[in-house]
Image (cartoon, rainbow, N blue to C red):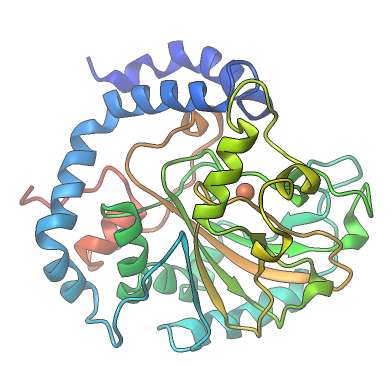
Length: 330
Ligand SMILES: [Fe+2]
C-alpha cells in the first residue's frame, strides 16, 4: 500500500497539529513528526534527488541552460544580488508592471482577513500568461544558488507558502495599523529545513515601503536558543524587545534596494518580518523552494498548487516544478 493512501486518515490529526502555527505540541515537536511522516512517504525520492544533485548537477544545469555567471553563494543564510543581471529578470519586471497596473491598490479581502496588510495578487492563469516568472524561477543561475543551500534538486513549493507569490503590502489595508502583528513580527518559518526564498523587488523599496527585514543565520540561531524559540513555551511570533534582548538592533538587515534587486534567504534559519508600516505600497515577488521532505503538514492541510510542465522542458525544470518527477535514468 502506498503511504499516501494513509493521508485521509492522518489529515484530521495533521490539521489539529498544524493549527495556530503548531501551537498544540510546539513547533519543534510538530516539525519532527511532520518530517518523519513526509520522509516515510518521499524518502526514496529524496535520496534519488540528493544523489542527482551530488553526481549529475553539472549535466543537469548544462541541459537547462549554461549559466552566464558564477553561482551566487549564500553566506550566513543569505545573499544579495544587486547586479540586475539574472536571466529573465527584465521580462519579470516588465510583466510585473502590467500586473501592478491591473491589480494594485484594490483590496481583495474584506476586513478581518489574516494579514490584511499583505495580499498575493498572483493567479494560476498568470503561469501561462506571464511565462517569464517560471523561466526566472527555473533558470540555472537561480537554481544553482538555491540547490547549494538545500543540498538537493529544489522543489518549487506547491503548498504553504505558494511557490510563486506576487505580493502587495499596503498600510491602507491594515486592520491594525501602527501595531505590528502576524508576519510584521519576528519569526522563523517552519515549512522545511531549509526553506529558501528568492525575493525580487518589483519597485524601488525604502523603509517607507515596509521592507522585508531579517537577522543573519548565526545571530538568529543565538536568539532562537536564548528565547527557547520553537518550543511549546513560546509562540510563533516574538516581539522586537525579546529579539533585541539578545541580538543588536544593528544586526537587522532591511531589503531596501532598487527595483530588480534579488535576495536569497534561508527563512527557516533566519528570523525575519516584513510589511511593517508600508506607507508606500510595496511590490515584491516571493519564490519559495524546499527539499523533497517538508517539516510541516501543509501538503495535507491546504489544496496543492501545480505548475505547467511541457515535454520539451529540461529534466531539471521538470523536477523543480514537480516533486514526483525523476529522470527515467534514475
Ligand atoms: Fe516568514
